[in-house]
Length: 124
Image (tube, rainbow, N blue to C red):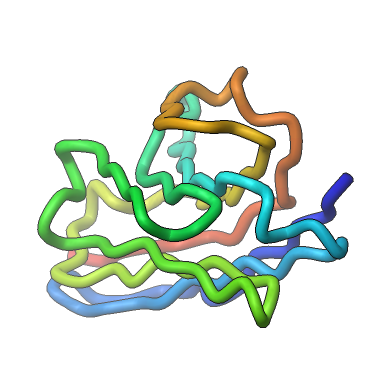
C-alpha cells in the first residue's frame, strides 16, 4: 500500500511555470506506475500524464503534450509534474495516483491509490 501527498499548486499567470510534487510513503514505491490527473469544477477527472515504475515510459494527454513533463525519483519516493506555458484551461485540482501497473493506463479507475490533490489556478 502507498500513501500520496501532493504539493506545489498555487496561483500563476498564463505563460508561467509550476512544478508539482507527489511524495509517497512505502518501501515499494519503485514498483508502482504513477499518474497525474486533474479535475476542474463541474468536470470529470481527466488524465494528464503517466510514468512507468522505472521511468522509462511516459505518456501524456494531447492537451499537455510538449508543455508538461512527468518524472520520478525512486530514491526520494517522489514523482513530479513540470508544467510550462500554462494556460487558464489548465486550472484544476491536480491529483497524483499510483498502482501496480505494467503498461500505460489513462483512466482513473485503473489506479487504486490517490493523493488529496493540490490546486493550480492559472490567471489570464
